Image 1: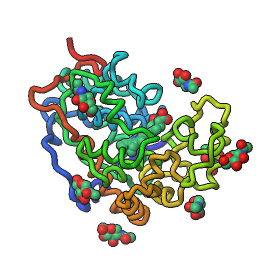
Image 2: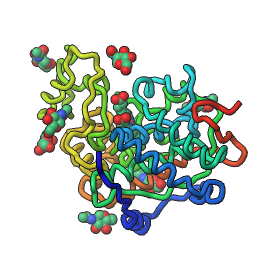
Image 3: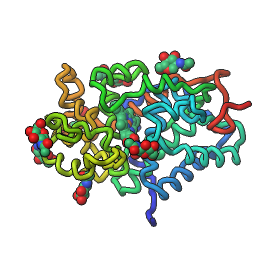
Image 4: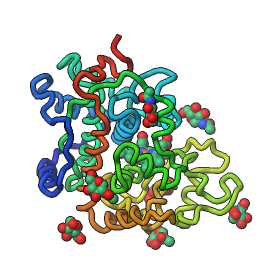
Length: 337
Ligand code: HEM
Ligand SMILES: *[C@@H]1O[C@H](CO)[C@@H](O)[C@H](O)[C@H]1NC(C)=O
Ligand SMILES: *[C@@H]1O[C@H](CO)[C@@H](O)[C@H](O)[C@H]1NC(C)=O
Ligand SMILES: *[C@@H]1O[C@H](CO)[C@@H](O)[C@H](O)[C@H]1NC(C)=O
Ligand SMILES: *[C@@H]1O[C@H](CO)[C@@H](O)[C@H](O)[C@H]1NC(C)=O
Ligand SMILES: *[C@@H]1O[C@H](CO)[C@@H](O)[C@H](O)[C@H]1NC(C)=O
Ligand SMILES: *[C@@H]1O[C@H](CO)[C@@H](O)[C@H](O)[C@H]1NC(C)=O
Ligand SMILES: CC(=O)N[C@H]1CO[C@H](CO)[C@@H](O)[C@@H]1O
């Protein structure tokens, strides 16, 4: 693949000017002296990984999300062990990108040993994934933002926490909102961050996670009435009833670009693949707030981009370990001995 990545700094600047950016206790220059080349190293490695496999951008973003919702952004998701978060239901056979984080960590350790946390590396990798995919698609520029740093790594994985704190695609909107609220995120954050669910054909979902919405799939009932009927034959073909549920489909087959607001237009048209997407606009459960936010995003990409950046920053700032709490892991998969 020969593509050039031109970082669109003017667009970054534009966002800094347009958006009122949220604050945090971490700082952008945390490693300015101890690891001055950190940002370049991470970006180079993320770029390599995405060149190898475009989907890795989505996978790294999701890893950051799954990290932050469980014991805060402390790289707990990266710890190996059958009692760790990797074996929790939302992650098992699903979360991916661990090897890429290892590669980045090794490159960082070579340059500045024992200084940079895995939690910060994962946060930077998620930001760079957004930026690089936007540039890869030659968008006029997707959103980017400054990542504040100084998170330390946790000492324990939390498998039961991962099972209970991460939202499932079968959950009600009220539950999803409650799970975001439990980590300090509000309804705006739910809607803005859900764009990843429909973001670009690099994001995939296994049939097993939505085939209950297709009629007759398991011989029960009518299709989900909030699913656009013109989408049903397509999805049924992709997900045969005799399949094992492991086939994958793009979460959004219509949207060429990761960070446009097309996802919200799709939701308004009943074209969300996961039930947890579609309920943002279709649920009766008195959550007209999510509907009106999604409708606003579907008509105004500027508002969406600003909210999105702020929500990503908020998510990256969930309960960081700072000071002498936690540690700087040498190997992201294990606690230092
Ligand atoms: C709102 C509640 C959410 C639910 C119920 C949910 C559920 C899911 C499910 C079921 C999948 C497919 C997994 C598989 O096929 O194994 C998925 C994929 C994905 N999710 Fe979420 N998610 C939610 C929120 C988020 C958020 C907040 C983010 C990021 C900030 C995110 C990022 C992603 C990405 C990037 C993928 C594609 C991953 C890949 O292709 O490797 N999701 N999500
Ligand atoms: C595990 O996560 C749950 C849900 O977030 C939390 O209530 C619990 O305190 C965590 N346990 C540990 C040991 O960190
Ligand atoms: C969510 O929080 C942000 C600040 O982080 C705020 O601007 C926004 O209005 C809040 N949304 C709702 C629905 O309260
Ligand atoms: C789906 O694939 C995973 C391995 O990726 C396998 O462990 C699992 O058993 C498969 N699911 C079914 C229902 O066959
Ligand atoms: C995705 O779009 C392509 C081209 O428009 C089409 O051939 C394919 O069937 C679609 N796949 C799914 C799962 O919607
Ligand atoms: C179904 O999707 C098509 C194409 O996006 C759209 O024109 C149509 O209005 C949608 N139907 C409903 C009921 O939303
Ligand atoms: C989108 O929202 C912004 C901020 O509220 C506003 O300045 C702009 O005029 C809106 N654009 C459109 C096309 O409505
Ligand atoms: C082929 C088949 O089983 N069709 C059924 C699909 O579901 C609808 C609604 O429940 C039934 O009316 C069809 O007979």
